[in-house]
Length: 246
Image 1: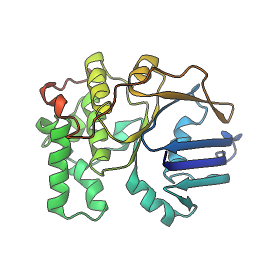
Image 2: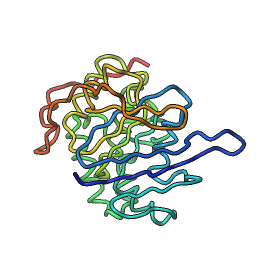
Image 3: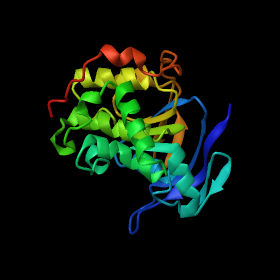
């Protein structure tokens, strides 16, 4: 299988604190859907930030798409090909309307305004969220914000999708909707979550981060249904959006 992302002996520590990561080795291949678990504070979110160059390792190497990545310039291309959905959607949504938030990424990638707006329309249509296009972002429910933050990343057409605690504060109906969406995406996935039931339904293998190291768990998760690449998410068109009630 094609190796998209490789972390080799990666160490990281925040200033004035003990090291969080003490030699992480991880290889992510095309088509994999990986769950990343572990106790709070063990560096799971930190690991995702390292993957896209928002933090830099103190030791070790990160290779993405066949090239060693060290400088900020190296990671600009990486961030165009790896989409990170933050744990808190308010960290990702900052424009006045949903349409502007989703168009922001494609415009930064060099798309014309017409191309960016077409991607907004396409992405919202695929996720059955067109009714939110003109909504004021800060007035959305918690569940709507989570799905819109995912739409912001998908509009940039990444090859890898990293999701940090995507089910936090979701009600059951919105969580079911998220599962439907993820299981119809073609992207390679890495998902951080404490929700074992959710992970069983959207990922194929599980790794645990603990004491600064990452190891595969001995009992793999049940395989998810094959995700579709043809007209992704068409089957979602009949599912109505429900908020989180947050």
